[in-house]
Image (cartoon, rainbow, N blue to C red; front, side):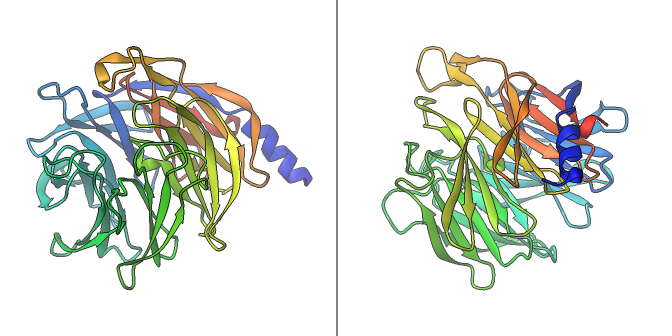
Amino acid sequence: MSKTDKNQLKNIVNSKLIATVNVGVNPTAMAITSDSAKLYVANGNNYGIAGSDTVTLIDLTTMMPVLTISSGTFNQPYTITLSKDETKAYVTNSNASTVSIIDTATNKVTGIIDGFNGPSGMVITPDGTKAYVNNYGASTAIPSGSGNTVSVVDLISEKIIQEITLSEYTQAAAPSAIAISPKGDFVYTANYTNGEPWQGTLSKISTATNVVVDTIGGTPFLGGTPFLFGMFALKIDASGKFAYLTNFGSNNFAPYGTTVCVVDLEQNTQSALIEVGIQPSGFDITPDGLYGFVSNYNTLYSSGAPDYTGLTAGQGTVNIIDLSTNLLVPITINVGLSPGCIKMSPDGKYAIVSNYTGNTVSIISLYGE
């Protein structure tokens, strides 16, 4: 390790929680503008409280919420993705068949794209013309966790132009997370499959042909299943060589997972399995590419029954991984209750965590800045 590397490691240990911001009910995924000034938070409202399907806009210069965006088109808003020119924000409605479109100049919903089934994530090609949306399932015919497709969207016409089937078998893939390679040549989905340990897979889709060209994983490859709620739990590094998946655990939270799986995308092999906290959920990489931050959800059903009324949250934490060694940095940061998504600000100053049952966002200052 060079002197520079040692100094950088010393600095990352100084990362600390500096702010907690109130948002809406059950915040899930987030999007940050390229100037690191604005943060959009999708409030999933899994409890179904009337009027609580919203998006919160936070001013990161003041670390204060400035607007709550409401729309009759929202139905358990789950992820939020900015267009390449940042004039639009696309909100996936995980309990519906739609993606809502926010005009970021007015912060009002101006339309929808329809025809999905429990859309749970969205990625956009580098040229900004196409999007890929994973369908986790939400309808009566295809309930939650039974989805098996990715929709291809023409963003110019704002219409679905193709459906890609992920699995040819009777067991649905249940794509819970989606990511695109830096060059835009491949899209990957992390598939929850049947919610049992060792069954998770990673589908690889060619964007040139819109065909699944490989399925990576399965018994005993991934060492557990990807995060049930976490379309934001699949991250590809800037080189496009490695993918990081958080192994949250089974469908009813028992057994729970405790690892992050590192996949070598060139060799289609697992290169590391890193022990972290209970129910690792969100994952993101610092803009300098040196560290991975993982949020540990640490929330179990008090009764063992799979309904959200029985959730009992322990202390939510964030672990830091040195990506050069895949070893944990000796620091654990306490955040809010049930931390899910984690996003890095593009300027490299902050790691931001959404706290699902805490209804807050935690802001972590990086490198002691």
